[in-house]
Image: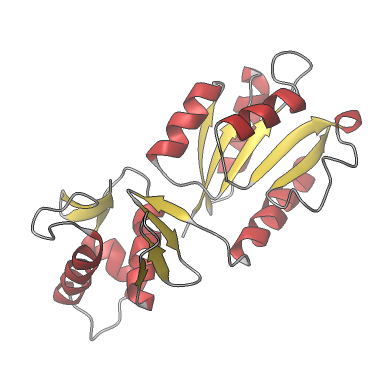
Length: 225
């Protein structure tokens, strides 16, 4: 399953170059922007495993971007691209487990390595979460928490279905692709099996499972709203 990355870089030339390089890796899906407003919008619309943010000496200094992240209450894993002199001991503190840094200038090989290393930290984290409507989804713990702290347990297949739908953003995932990614084309699995799991998920997540608001049927597949 592709890892989704949101790339913010105010410099158009640098952003285009980085986008081209990252996209060479087939296991990444990248959305790019030069607008902090669009960063917030994209994070509200869909889920990203990593937010990469480029800094400069002007409006988008490391301090300004970190203030933006704090003010917008962004909880995503972040990789800041910074000048060496901008990173001090306070920024490198163990307290900032979701904020990481790569110093400019860097070789593209080191950039790839840093991305993979940073993503590995959240892949092994028991605190990884996703927002789905009023719910907070804990894939590694296999449950969902409602706003009033009501806990809803999930099966392994339900977790895999949600992860697949979340990773696709606003795009619908067709039934064949879900069968491939969740059940790996097992010979004893049919579309009916998938429909049954979707039905059970809707019973757990929807106010009225007959009127889906979170797991939407679309074009022969499903997506998360």
